[in-house]
Structure formats: structure tokens, C-alpha cells
Image (cartoon, rainbow over all chains, first blue to last red; front, side, top):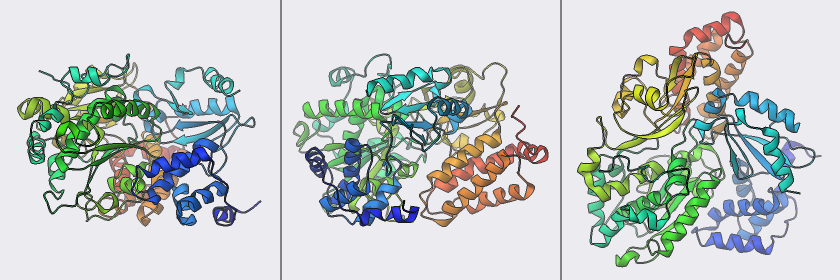
Length: 175
Length: 426
């Protein structure tokens, strides 16, 4: 296994993956919305992630080569934004709000319950590959705190919610 | 007359108004005025005269901001209008309500603003996590395009406008308008040096106006019902209505549209229903996580930019976070410091290195290891990270709850030191 430093530059040393036709079509659509390739670069990373779940070194390099962007620059962008995942994540990403209103309403206690329910802490993925738990800044639903997102869905008033039932629907949905 | 122009169409128990329903209640009237021959300068004058101030946090007069955009034949042909829909200020939940409750109000306002500065391309910079807002806005944008309110030569005015919905890939700093522009350009979202201001050299170096969602949602009303109506909405010194929210341990947390100048007490006690049983109000942040604490003694002040400033804080986003008597103020401020240190973009040294240091000290307090020396270091950082010492407003924002918290809740810090534990934990 490489050290952390080696991993950071890995995208400059690996061979590029192939972009799929659907990905290229979506990237080309983004080109019509922005005046230069650099702006499309960030959008292309999001497109690749949508299809593959995360952005590997190989796919980052593929995007850089396709759009003729410097690899290191795209890497710098990819690692800056927290919704670009540079490591594999589970099928459902849980974005767990731990900002101030949720904190007052007991998000730390609820998080302990979630960690117990799923057997993971922040930054970890369940062994069955179903869930990754990540903290996120204020989700803008503070009158219904604590809140979290599972995939694209917002879940509110978590102190009163049946967490097991919430997670069950995602386990089933993906089978 | 309409008294709640921002939320009059909002009812979250049903889907938002589609274009036809929105038009049936005076929607897109500004656009029709424009089609009847209103000049961009007429629109600018109206917005200036309305007294509208930016609702994103800084409270800068909107018309004045627009007036810095070069106009006329010598001005650059390409200009941009950008809506800041990157709502991420801790404790702020108002723009989501507007976008999900009445999407055409935002589009209506964007057309008016873009026409005023003669921008032919507008972006909505939307938080990536706001998936429901995205779905609703995409549908509304498609309707507006279909109806000919977007596209080329809108209603035979000769004015062209495309609105592009951009979903962000995250980070709080994107809410800072120049960092937002870098993010839109596909760069790391570090703030830019000012000047040049975006009004002159913004997105891809072109004149650009960035306005908050709620600010833009004020424009359709101003155009439809006029300045006298708008200026008559207020109960105080500033004009119009505003969304005010309350979160924390009150009986009925929520978000309401109220006239500026409404007493804080009315918001807290009538709308939010007062504190939950057995709890007392200890303090509150009046406008999100980057504002100074206020105290129960300030409840009789009004929700007005100047009134709040007079108490040493800022109205900012108008969404209040309530600290109750059984929640630890040191823990609450510590939570905010974790947030700010995590969200520093890392560009300037005081912010990048100072905030994590501050955060470490709060972790020590939490673990019962706080000392008077730590307290002195925190005091120093209120100055080191304050206004004028850093590249942008993020770290000064962090010093607002920190400095005021050290001042107002000193005793709580002292107890953490003398008892070597958090006195609020059982």
C-alpha cells in the first residue's frame, strides 16, 4: 500500500481509464453551459462520480486527458470540494449534519445511535458496502433538526425517527 | 395589498405553483413592464429607491451594488448575473424555503435583475445537497423557457437570457461571492482579492452581479406593486419584509416572513412560541453562526439592521439560533469553531492555522483540560482573526460568536477550568 503522499500524486502516474459514451455525452452537454474547459472539468468529475460512485485516479486522469486540463490542477480541484469522493464510498452516502442547530438538538447522541446501528464512524463504509457516513455542514433544515441526507433524500427530526426503518428502505431499494 | 410578498404563494403541503398559477397572481409582471418599454436604468432606479438591502448576510444596498456595473455602448457585451443559492451558514434555512416553495418567484426576480444590468447569461449557484430545490427549479426553468420568458428576444424586447442551474460540489467558502465565482469557473474556491470587484471584473473577467436568493425574490414585488407599497411594508427603518427563522429549543421552531422592524420578542415568543418548558433563554445568535451573541436583555430591540448593529451584532441572514439554559455555551461555540476551522479554504495563514488552534483549545475545554492560558490564547485570536487581519470574512465571522461568547459567558468558561469538566454534563 502506498503512503498518503504517494496516493496524492497517483493520478499523475496511473493509466487513464476510458470514459463511457454516456459520460462523454453528458460532459459535452456541460460544454454548452460554460465558456471554457476548466469549468467543465469540475462538472465532468461530478458526472464520472454519478456513474461510478467515486472518482478514482484513473477516471480523474481520463477526465483531464479528455478535456486537456493539467492533471495536478484537476486533482487540486477534486480534493478541495467535499462532495467529490476520491475514495470508494458505499452505495448510499449518509451526509450527517453536525452544525450548531443540530448540535443543540442532540445530533451527537443520534450519531452514536447511527454508529451503533451501522457499525461505522465518520469516514467509514459498512462491510456490506451499503452505507458511508460523512459529516456535512448545516443542511438548512434547522427547524426540523437533527437532520441528515441518505443519498438524495433529506431525513428530519432524527431524535424522534426510527433510524433502523430509515436505513432498511435503502438496503432493500438497492437489492 | 400584499403584505407577505416573499411567501404569499408558499404552502409546503402542496407542490409549488406552476407557471400558470404563478402568473395568475401577478407573477412575471416586471417582465411585462419591461416588454412595454421599461429601460434597464428605470429598473435600477426602482430597486435603488426601494431601499432593498442584500439578504445574504452583508446587508449591502442592492441598487448601489448594481450601479457599479458598466453600462452603455462602451460596456463589455458579456455580463453575468449570479444567484448565490449556496445556503450553508450554520442555522440558516430560509433560501431553501423560497426555492422549494415558490421557484418562479426566483426566476421572475432573476429576469428583472439580469435585464437591469443587461446580462444575457445567469447562473444559479445551488448547494449540491439541495436536491429537492434542484428538482423543483429545473422544472420551473423548463416551464419559463417553454413560455418564452427565457431564450432569445424575450417577449419581443430584443433581450436574450439563459439561466443555467449549477449545483455546487460543496464547501462553505463558496458562499463568499468571489470564491463562488472561482468555483463556477471550475477552480478551487479560494476568495479573490478585491478590487477589482465582481461588478467590474467577475465571472471569467466580465462584469458580474452576485445576489442572494432572498434578495432576488424581493424584486418581483417591487416591480409589480411599486416603491411606495414596498417602503410601506416595514415597521422599522429598513424597507420590506424578511424571512426570520428560529432554531434551537423553542416550542415551535420555524421560518416566517415578517416586516423589518418587528420586535425580536415577537419573533421569539409569538412565532417561535417561547422556550420549551423548564428552559430559559440564555442568549442567541441573531443571523447565523457568524454573528455575535445577543442576550435576553436585547429582546425588545427590533429586527432591523441598525438596531441589531447597535447591540454589537448583525442581522445577517435573520435566522436565529437559540442558546437555552441547559445547553453549554462553551460547547456551542466549540461546535462553531470546529465548523469554521474545517471550512477554512486554507489560503491565508491566520485563518488556516489560527482556527484549528482555537478549535483544539475548545476540545481541551470539552475534555476538562482547559486553562487560563488557553483562555488568553482565545482572547488573542479574537483579535488575530478579526476584520482586516485575514483575506476574507470567514475567520472574522468565526470571531463573532467567539469574542461575544467569551464576553457574555465568561463564567461558563471559568467553571470549565475550575471544575476541570463541562458543568452542563450530568
